Length: 414
Ligand SMILES: Cc1cc2nc3c(=O)[nH]c(=O)nc-3n(C[C@H](O)[C@H](O)[C@H](O)COP(=O)(O)OP(=O)(O)OC[C@H]3O[C@@H](n4cnc5c(N)ncnc54)[C@H](O)[C@@H]3O)c2cc1C
Image (cartoon, rainbow, N blue to C red; front, side, top):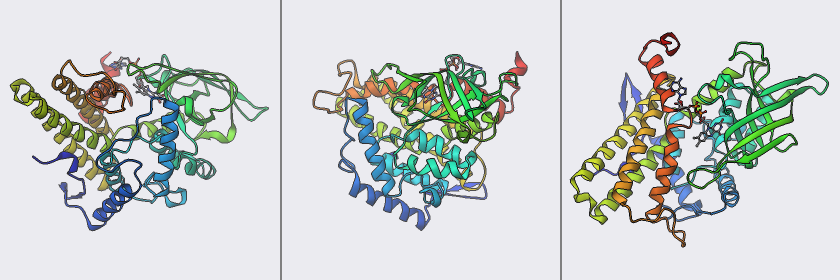
């Protein structure tokens, strides 16, 4: 059987069809990245896992130092312009690098919100001064960012947000009042990309601005939330008199909705990391099923076969979307279909994993730090969030229905 985690993208789009043969340049980039990872990974390439640290602050410190090393090799933000520390590479090059990182079991970056969301947003909407000031520090994790969008009463309906940015003409900026929630890594963030209402009288989407807020100031209270996995990745953030000066407005005043839409586009779309991770999870699962004898259970055989087909389909969906991007066409709302597909595939695969592991395995890593079978339960719990973050699956279905299939708009059905 083909090892899905080793099947690589490397495609071009010719007259509406995918060509999966990599160009010599793409092969060279992949080889360069793999060689670099073999030489620089802080664990054994192809064998080990990144260290699992029980304390989140220690883990973030380790991840920051890893990101600095990775950025030193030129493997972070490869699509960013060279002026800001990137390689000016294309979407396919980025995809190849992400595949290689996932294959090496490189962990998610400490600065992933900065790299994946804030950086691309600044590149599109930031001033030259803002790009020069923030982008290099995002690349090597000198500064971490958080995304301050969701509120207790504004998640799916983000335009209902009520956090206020109140004009202070004398000081030349805005005073911030309100609350955010589910803010990943806010406790470690140096900066936040904040959506706040600058004009409460304007229609909902028109009175919002995007602001970069310094997280190290009085008037900001970050309170970690405890998750089902017993970790504390995300937080409530309370603002009471924090200040944002004029030169930290991103994009036009009251134009934050457009800025946030470009941020959210980067949260969806092709997902080489999840693709390789799920292909690897599937391979481990098949191995485990063989070892434990559950492969002989005909009900599980069926589920395992379905898991294989689904991961393969996810791979093909990714490649089709990637070839579309490579041919210069925007992916647009089809990114929602990809997000929908992988999150549901992931949940089904994890259900199958628990059926294979059975009820006798530990819930967590054992005392020696060996992942053992306990990592499946932790992974099952973690991936329950996949159908919520970056927009819930109900919202993705509405987007696909309205903007891909052309069904009547939700607002017209009420
Ligand atoms: C792991 C994780 C990390 C996150 N990190 C961040 C972060 O760093 N920064 C940040 O700003 N946010 C973050 N979020 C928040 C995330 O963006 C929101 O949870 C998400 O947008 C949903 O909003 P909500 O939780 O308020 O749910 P709600 O919007 O209240 O939805 C509740 C339920 O109602 C359904 N629903 C709502 N509206 C509709 C509709 N119109 N049609 C059909 N069904 C509907 C939803 O699908 C959902 O099932 C994170 C979430 C998770 C799970």
